[in-house]
Length: 458
Image (cartoon, rainbow, N blue to C red; front, side, top):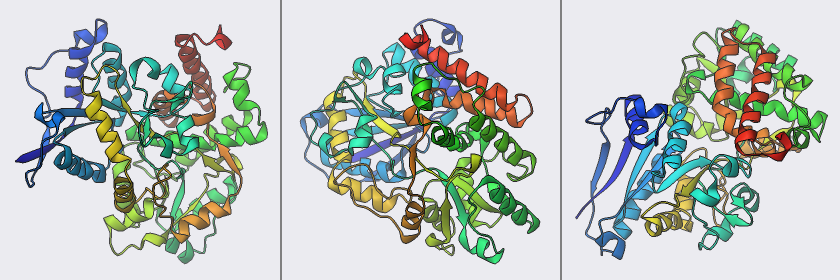
């Protein structure tokens, strides 16, 4: 029997066709409908031995799973093939460019025509205000694997004591400045402990003919990760996140946040990101570091393995890490929110989708993902193995002070992520000031709060 795992990459024109097909009235209905998809599905076909057909397989079940780029790893699709072999249930992975994903997902959810499984960022706030999981997702609390989810990660996926999502990625890893250790040693550089020292490091790297920082604004989201240095505002005033959540404080006018955005703009203006930071792509970061053209990149703790995969002569342990030093931050920015799987409540294949989630949370699958995805060191399950290297462990040990990022601690921040990215792009191009970016964040949050009928904004 021939089994297939479908991998679909939705192009811009195909996304527009979908928007036209599933929107229930509104501007999206005016998009031109295509008679054929603009981008055909790429099918990865593998011959496997015949297997016993399950009850689901007898109905020729295919579950659909839509997610943003980089959320579904090759290793997961490989496990998807094994899942098909064992159950007869096929999996159609629909991968959407990250800058288009959120809009398409919400259109499909609101139209009641979402995929069987959809990917979404966890957050105890946004899964309510953005996804309305109590209405649009299936309660997974009773599943066999639910009790294995790390309690801190489970909080970000739960409403009213019920678990609605399953973590996809390692949320123990934080966004930090990853650097070429041997390059630092050759140039006599030390790990910076504040923004001034970081600028000094960048200047010396530039003087050596190397671009200090690889940045990739074109993806729409990566450059926003620099704002996780906002933990400096929490350190200055531990009550600040609560004040934001109660609409008793604003982003505009906060001294730490104003400094953070001004320093980001300064990094770009001083050439620390090179000439192509607006068009660089996140997918090319490991190869760019491996080439020696760039010295640093904001990344998670799996970069060493990914650089080694791009260039086997580049040792995995030649990548070190230090915390994002904007605002002189020296706290480890922790975030138990991350890409997660949700089963759409309107799915006709809920039982098959549950089997997929059970399969992905098994001991064997979690071990396979840890072994085959470089950035996965500790998936948030009690039955997942740990794979921290000495270099990564040294990084975590160096920063005992941990502070939750705004994604996890501030309402309506995570849903505004891509809009914040657009404003930051405008800031880099001198079309907005740091102060205007902060003012717009307040506006974006207020809009989200109004849509959620949040009493603090009434």
